[in-house]
Amino acid sequence: MKLYNIDNTGKFFEKLAACQGEIEFVDQNNGCRTFLPKQGIQEILSPLSLIHGRINQIELLFHDHRDFDNIFRWVINKGGISA
Image (cartoon, rainbow, N blue to C red; front, side, top):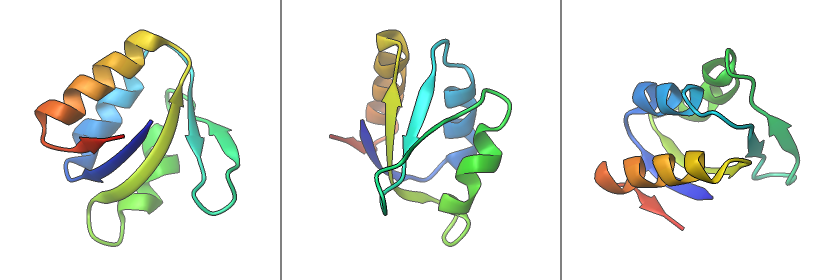
């Protein structure tokens, strides 16, 4: 799932930490996948939001479809764009 224009990064990191299954971050530059540990999500993803206080684009892979559904609904309700 690619997500765009995440303004509330703190809440976004909380939502990701609440996911039940594994989540992988896909690096835009080289396509490498990194598993996100539940306790270190914010530390790993914070550099994406440091420049402007938002995440312009991020690609995540969810191993549990319920997590995908929850994040998708949250993004849609917050006005973000998902593709």
